[in-house]
Length: 188
Image (cartoon, rainbow, N blue to C red; front, side):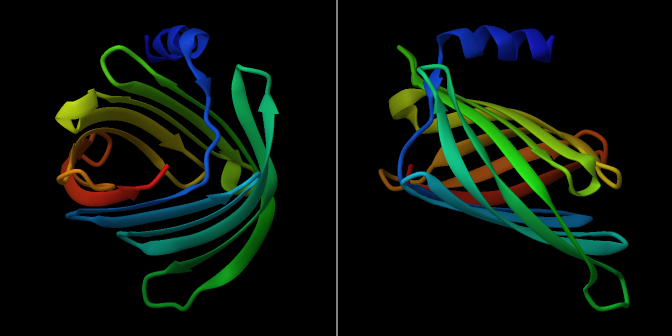
């Protein structure tokens, strides 16, 4: 069902393509997750940090955007990660390739954003569908992530703070069976 919804939304959306910064941090009982993306022109720098029961993973990437006509934007480039088990320091550096496909479209009710990522490190993939509801400042999203060491599906509600780029987040992780809260800043 989610795949069908993504396909239908992809038919009406336009490619994402703007300079901006995105920061997000979420906290649950068992995990802390933070991501950052800075885009200037066709280059995007990304960083992530995930601290969970048993260890942590930190990663970074630098991708270059290839617009696919009016369909979407494909980004590709190198990625690096390091991990740690609880009680140990960070080690086990790994290098790989990251691919990102995203699409954004304004709608009569707000906007729809679609994101799909693949990282060859740990065969990681991530998908997100986010719908914003215009002037209300509310948006909701569903995401699915999976790798050799990770598996999660989330549902989140975001509320923009005033007229600025910040939002408060509240959501649920279905595999971990726990709620989370967080914040994000999006200047795209």
